[in-house]
Length: 170
Image 1 (cartoon, rainbow, N blue to C red):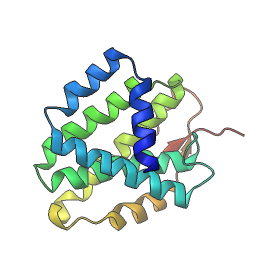
Image 2: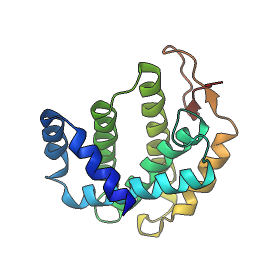
Image 3: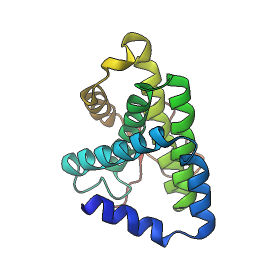
Image 4: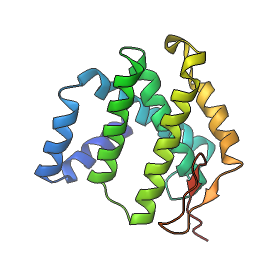
């Protein structure tokens, strides 16, 4: 119930233009949209449980959450459609999220980068596993291992291809 309250309060706070942008993406893809919402709730819940201090700010838990979010969107959407269509939708919906709820430039770079890490990881393991048999644990365990090598993003010129990134807010 709390999740739906947050969702509706978020929508209510959006401008008409932003609501229209969101609807232009979700209405043509109702199943993907529902599955993406489910992925959002699952990824947020898991990240909050595992990393309560950093999942909701710009710390390493946030990096994990964004990558996991994209893996889950792809996992759920690939079960009902092609992985390429799922990837296209995932990229569009996660990019739109950053556009609709803007952050500071470094935070946006971090979020988009970690989203890409999640999408890339899913596509990397896709050939080895039939998409109907993906499970959440495949991504959780792998992304936790990736956290060991995560890099601190300090400026917009930093490029850490293949690594999760986070902001050091000490």
